[in-house]
Length: 188
Image (cartoon, rainbow, N blue to C red; front, top):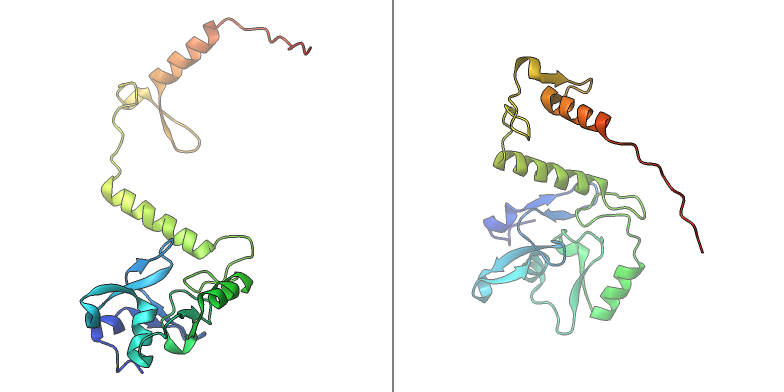
């Protein structure tokens, strides 16, 4: 099935058994990383969309005046059986008319909402990257420089540590504030 494709391309394709899509897991390009990207060794290492590259290997070049439409509506699919050369006008029309119930990675999504799986994965990847760059260190001082040890620590019901000195300062400051009288605005 993949015999025509080079090893570097085969390693970046995962067959999806339910839909028959060949999902691209390599580099991404296009608006919001919407399509797979690779290099075309036949054309001086020029960057090319992955689905176009696979189409060229199986079927030859895309006909002039045409572009490849994903019949399965999954933009990361590179299965040549799911691609069809059509004019730009037809491709846009199909894209607008198609129900948006599948995200670009092939996950089912609710109408009117983004893909929860992709959003969750993106958030987890961001958090992991942030934690690697900024490992958690135990807090030894509060933001005002008070030492967080012994009696100076208040532990709230939520488990959060608070500085007792800062808490006392805030409490005293609020007690000594003169109470202001709220006035109603007069509308003209």
